[in-house]
Length: 266
Length: 292
View 1 (cartoon, chains in turn orange, purple):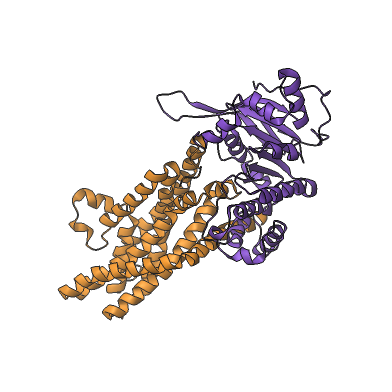
View 2: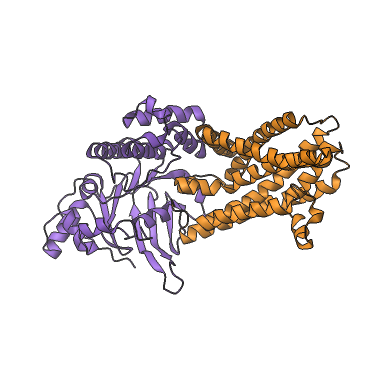
């Protein structure tokens, strides 16, 4: 019980700290939101210009839900980078906190933050395009958001190991990984138009399944049962990526402690 | 083997007791610790800490002196668990650092020369984060933090403004408060007064004395300020090239350097003798060496 309370407090420490950081950087938060809205509108207007409701909806959903997944991924992936730049990483790593608690605390805030960010974005786009969501199955979409979040948290944990091993190159690789996920996951187009080798990559990206399922749920009103082909790969990825992410993070920590890479940089 | 030199007990009585009666395990036991870094694959590794053994009893303040690059900060990082040992072992109050990592982490905290914080956050927010990591609840942490900060001369109004708006001295006091907040029984102070003005330095030194006297804290202190080391430390070790060159009480060091080397009986003479370099070299070298 004492250990559980201690873990809960430590996990909450990351939620509270990240909330405080969001408050203190509020000006930047507004700037990022404006950029996200402008980006999503610009892409979605292509669908409007073609006059296809299905294409418009597909692009809106792609823009909005990619925003959510990338916010979650980036928040977790930047966990180490941010602390390294501020110089606090050594203090956090010295604290009696299990890495799973540290990463899941950061992930919890990332999900809350991503949901709020995405809800605002979706509301603005729905108003702008007067979207008709009468047929939408919101429960199924929410289910895939939840399961997709879990697998993206795992990928984010794996990404967070990179800045631990190499400060600058690690951050660059997180950025490259995120760009590759954007390219292969069918955010703005069906993955069937990709070259064969890219289609193979699209099958290991959780975003592919989340976007496909959410589109079918919100545009066609598909039920969770009908979306089972998208559900099981996400569940498998969540069960694989999270433990692998935690294991990888532990290995990266050991490497950093052996080579002296936890020291402040910047 | 380390090459530590000791003088027999006929040296003049030190101003502080060198070793307290031993009851239970040492607060810190470092046994033949060695750490190497491979900077360039074509070259042999740099030995940052070389077969160093230190024993610090509960309630003592142990000073670690040495030039920049001598291995002081690496030694502190080894004890903190931020670096893994290549050889040797570390025990904190009988807990092995490798096998009982969490137990050791609950007993120690550290203040480093650079007061590292989330600079946009306030002291209250930074301290709350630190406290929760160590399992304190929010209310308990707030009360405790306010008390410590008040003792260090930082009023409640300053607690809500971003740390980046505070002076270097005040930031260092917040760093000390962050460490004390978690009630460490072993406190690792890595040049805590470097860069502080004389008043802030005095405040911090007085606070360190209070910690020892009132809270039974054991302190490992690295410093370039020899007067500070003399004032605070019961024993002093001097690192040179990663090795413990000598270990004695401040008075013992002075006697040693006078009797064995014919130098003036000062800590400065001892520092020069055992580091083999001048204080000017030390200051000019800066932070370039990865070992420090």
